[in-house]
Image (cartoon, rainbow, N blue to C red; front, top):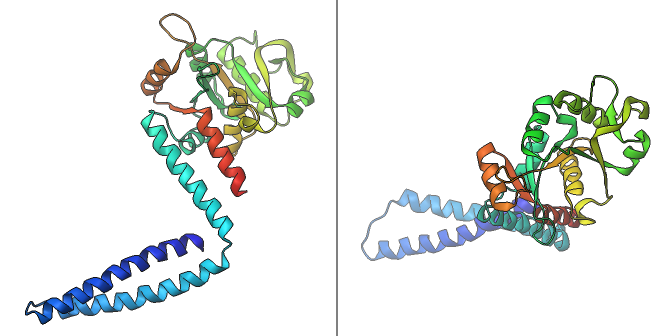
Length: 278
């Protein structure tokens, strides 16, 4: 109702403009200039319609609490601002990143300059494949982590390689099977070997609103994508010297591999906006 009402208000302002235009035509005709009378008639009919719509819109707005309207407008403005800011910094928008996570793609997540200022390859654990594991090992540190909620870690008593379907645990296929087992709600403690080649990370409840880290960002993205709250992540290295890749290199890598790149700061702003309208 409020969105329609706002659109109707825009029509109302256009109606006022048409009213002035119609009067101008009337004065010009009296001055000896000739205009199509059918056009003037349609303008007049349009005026009556838009004025009627405006009256209905006003009644609708009266029923809609102004605080909710302000919160909704604030959230929409925040999303527009974030999208514009992301474009300026060569970042992707958060909705774009969420959609890629939903489709089982990697995204690059960059933390704040005051923290590590590094980027992680992140994807939903429930979507992992041997090919994805080969990619993450090739471009990352080789230390592959899985972020999970505390209750899931405790339930599975995890430090980990999956027993079934794995050999040494270090191959891309074995790591993928371990991660899929971690993401499964049906897996049990006895399904895993200890120690293992996958490193579990405990997600802090409240996500990036409580701790602005890659662990929390990865699980938040998985949940926003409608997937189990388990994610796989690995730090990206600079191919030149083996150090952790920083923003310029991360942006170059994102373009080369056609990956979305986002910041934790932008994710926090979106999460704050969602909390305000919930």
